[in-house]
Amino acid sequence: MVKTDHRQYTGDLSLEEQAGIISRAEGRVGYNADYLSRTVDRLNQLGLEYPSMEKWNSMVSDFLGQEVARRSKDIHPNQRPLPF
Image 1: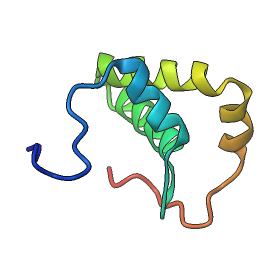
Image 2 (image 1 turned 180 degrees about the vertical axis):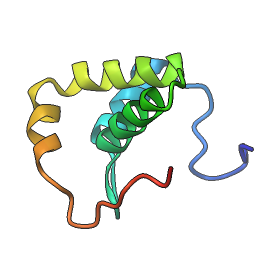
Image 3 (image 1 turned 90 degrees about the vertical axis):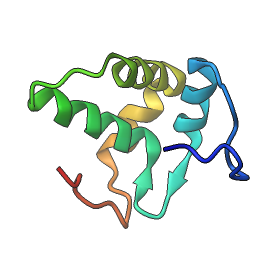
């Protein structure tokens, strides 16, 4: 469910705009790009395919280039395992 009246609701963003936001975002439990990558990996392990998430993951990786490779070796101090 999406609350379109929420102050953080941005409306329709292109995949490129979404990838840019994901590539820069960081929360209490880690980097959004890392969470996305780990989610896609786990879904693939479970035999589930989500083309839109795979596209985001690819775009975020392209957006960040080598930064993703460097950061993936770092563990955010509050990073937790995926809940599934």
